Image (cartoon, rainbow, N blue to C red; front, side, top):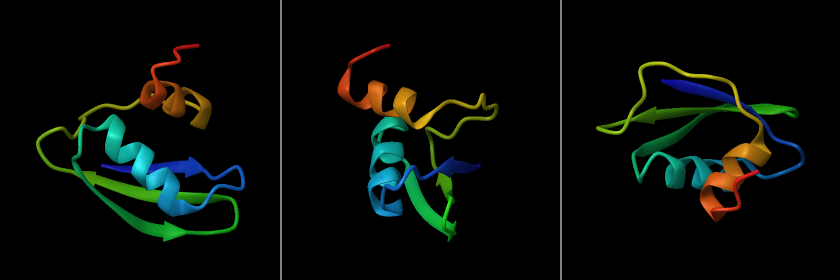
Length: 68
């Protein structure tokens, strides 16, 4: 699965690390990056088969436990 995430001025490596935490340490790879967004590939046993778009704030809330 490939996620396209808006960077909001964050480095792609930080976003990839947050994705890795959310997907319980699945294999996460930065596939493509541009000025606005980053494509992150997620593979492994915890890969999802369906997806709903969420904001970076939502993704970060999962990592910190600060559910909004």
